[in-house]
Image 1 (tube, rainbow, N blue to C red):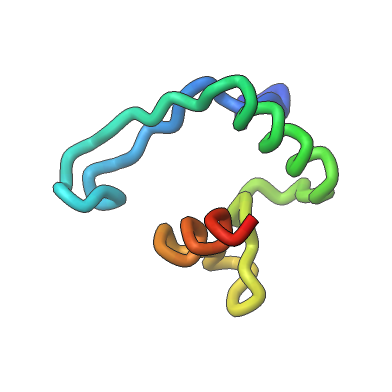
Image 2: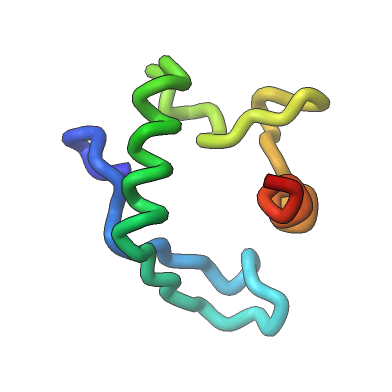
Length: 75
């Protein structure tokens, strides 16, 4: 999220976040940005130290990449 609360156009992944240990940039299309913006507006999350998607197991840790992908696949 940008400082003004809008969803960014791209997500930068650090090397330790990727399978091949290479930094990557993921571009976020307009439909996904709209959906993420709607989620952010409804989540009432004001503490930016917490993950954007909290999990039931650990609110502070959030989802890992695999479980988040599985959750989205079920939608």
